[in-house]
Length: 458
Image 1 (cartoon, rainbow, N blue to C red):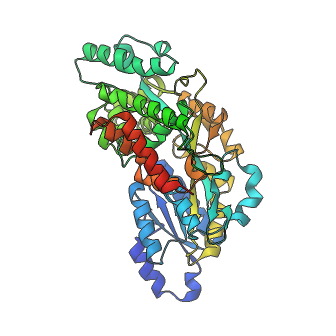
Image 2 (tube, rainbow, N blue to C red):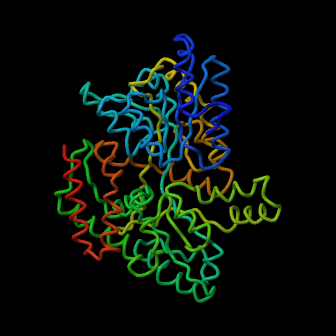
Image 3 (spheres, rainbow, N blue to C red):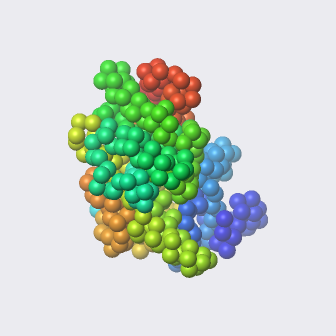
């Protein structure tokens, strides 16, 4: 939390209570997830300072860890005192659809409508959510940034195992077998360490686990809902594809090619395992893994030797790559999250909240915030996508190329009840049923389908 711009929430509440009504109208309460990198937060703080100077509105900013944002927000909503503006990296896929359905979010159509021409395809559409109070859809959020799935590979570890990047197969089954059956044993023999070939997130508290699993479902063309949000889980083809996807995801763990701790990983943990070189490759829903090394390479607090080692890791050793082709030989299609902020319908200062949204969505304000995350997030606007930033190195170019090839939305965009399933993480629970409880894949898949049907049927 940064007290130069904002104090703690409790202090802010006391100050607001003591102020006259006119002064309160000039104060805006904003909650934001803490960034992964200081530059990400610094660009947010700079934007808020610009907003304060331009409007004369004081911003009380509170920043919390990602995992704390939804519990804190839910508690604030339940008490009738939500912030005016909120943003969390998990709002979109674990909460916003439910809040919109319940009438807890403010309609921002009047703000977004004039901006429509600026947005890239498959961005602002994610904000179009259904409100059961009004019985219609509207734009209940403002899109800020996007993310999709990548693989991160240690090129030097691959070489130590006797392989090079050109040896990595592009076929689906051959690709996963390569890391498990060839790279892992060869690297262990060459290094004398118990390193694992694959870092596959499987923790129930990890968003990476269900986001990664969607790629395996997409590989087998599993469609859980149609475009209208109606469930397709009774289709035998869906079950067949889901069983195959779950088997492919869990088989490397069963064969001893994934760290045993992966079943309890939270979102940062596959990153940590990769950074510590206990896995040769991992899949991750941003390039935050590579970007961490870039940040280290320009860290003034690091020694010259540390900065040089980080620079080498970022520029030479780490490979950011797409997934292999699907089992049918077609190129992989990627799901994309669109991360968005919200204005709460119970906000005490909606007018100032909307002014803030307009301001932060201006190109000159949003772009520095996105690029301050060092490639972790991809833009939602056409102009920012073509910024030189995305052509500056191989990792960012890989992100650019994946998004330019087109992405698809997650199921929660079509059926808000999937935010509940994501929050519950039925996908990781099924993985753990297989690898920890030794339940047959078919039974775990059937349990997952039954739970999806129980929660998300319309």
